[in-house]
Image (cartoon, rainbow, N blue to C red):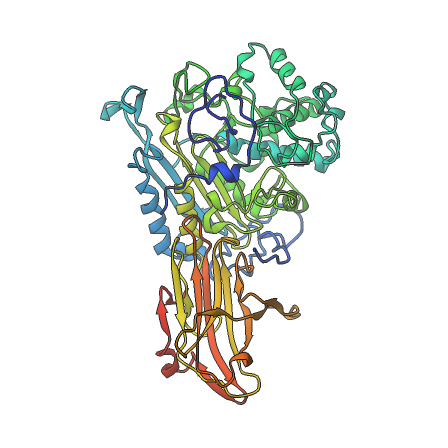
Length: 631
C-alpha cells in the first residue's frame, strides 16, 4: 500500500516511499487540496427520495423524476433504471452536454499529464439514466518510463477504447459494500453498532484497542492510522498479527482519521459472525439480489477484455513489483489478501453502480429485492461525526464533501471515491446520482492529483436540475462561477414611511462559509461604502417556521433547495437616497448550485417604491454576473 500514504480512497496524489506508513489525515484536507480548477443553514433532514411510501418490497414504478423542479418534492415511488432523455429525467440537456465536454478536457494535460486515460460517465435522476458515456481509453499504455516521466503507449491497434460496460477496479468505493454488509448484520441483530470490536475478535484488543467500537470503524474515528504494509507479511497469520498489535495514534472517538484498517477489521468481524468469506457475502447479500452481474471480487479471465488497466506497479512508487496491472486489484494490501478485502478489491461497471445508487435512493429496495430497511439506509446518510466538522460521515458513506461532490454536496449527499479514479455521489434532495469511473493511475499514480474532474462533472449535474422561479417565468440567477463576484443592484430609492422594507423570495446553495450571498445598501451621498443589511428568512410549508434572523446580512450553505421568503427592515435609511444590491461572492475552489432572487419589492408604507414584476422597474435593475433564468 506504499503509494496510498493517506488511504486508498484518494487521499494521496503522489507516491510515498516504500517504507512510509502514514499517520492518517482527513480526506477532505488532502483530497481537496490540489484542484485543477481555476455557516451552513441547518434544516430538518429531507427524507430519502422514495422513502415516503413505506411498504412491502417489489414496487416497480414508472419514472417520476420529470417535472420535480428544484428537488423539494422527491418522488414517492421506487423506480428501477431505464435509459431516457434528460427531459424525461427532469434534467436540462445543456449542462449534461457540458458535463461530458468538461470530463473530456481531463483526457489531456491537467496541467501536465492527463488526469485519466479514460472514463465512463453516468448520470441520472429518478429512474432515468440520462447520460451514459465512455470517453478515452480503457487500455492505452504498456508501461511507464520513469526517466522521462512518460507513458509507453501501446500500438494503436492494441489500445482499447473505453466502453459503457468497461469494468473498473473500484478501490475504496469497495468500502461502501462492506459497510452495507455490516448494516445488514446490524438489522439482523448479529452485530451491534456500539459494541466493542474485541467482543467479536478478542485478539483485536491488543495494542490498547479494546475500546474501539463497530461504529468507530464505520465512521473512521477508531484512531487507526491510514494503513500499514500488510503485504510485507507473507502469511495471513502474519498480517493478522500486525493488525492485532497495531497501536492507535489517537484515542477512540477523539479524532477523524481515514483508515483502510477500519474496513479490514470490519471484514474480519463479518466473516467471523457469518462464517462466510467477504466475496460470498457480497454476492449473496447484494449483487445477486440486485442483479449486479458485473460486480465482484477477483474477476475471472473471461472478463479481461472488458477491464480497464490501472498502474505499471513497480518500486519505488508501488510496494510490489507487478508490472502493468489489469484484472487484478491494484491495492497492495488487498492483493496480498487474495484480492478480497474490506477496504478494496471490488470490480464493477457504471450501470451496476447506478443500480446500487437507485437502490439506496429508493430506501433499500430495487424491483422485488430489498437489501436494507429504509431506517438502515437513513443511517447510511446520517452524520455520526458532528464532533468533526468537515468530516461528515454516515455508516461507511461520506457526506457533504464539496471536494469531490462539488455542487451536488448537501448535508444528506452521500458517496465515496477510490484511489484508482472512481467515485459515486447520491443526492437524495434532488434524487440524482453520478458515477465517474476513471483509470487515473494508468500508467502511474503520480500523474493526477486532486479531484477536479469529479467536481466539474458534479457541478454540471447539479446545474442540470432546474430551479423553477417562485413566481412568473424567470428569476435572477447568480451563476456558479468560482473566484467571482456577481451583483444585482436596484435603482436609487428614497424611503419615507415609518417602516419601509425590502421583500423578495430567495433560494441559495453555496459552499458553506466560503461563498456568501450578501444584502447591502449604499447611501447616495459621496464617500459612503456598501454596508450589510440585516434580514430575516422564512421557509416554505403550511406550518411556516419562525423567521430566521440574519443579523450580519448574509446567508451561506444549504437552504434545503427550496424558496424562502425574505424581509429586510429599511427604517434605518428612512429619508435617505439609497441603493440596495445582492452581492454573491465565491472563492477559487468549490461552489454550490448558486443563488436565485425573485419577486423583489420595496414597500414604503402603503406605497410600492419598486416591484420587479413591473416592466419599467425590472428594466432599472443593474445586473453584473446575474442573469434572468427560467431554470
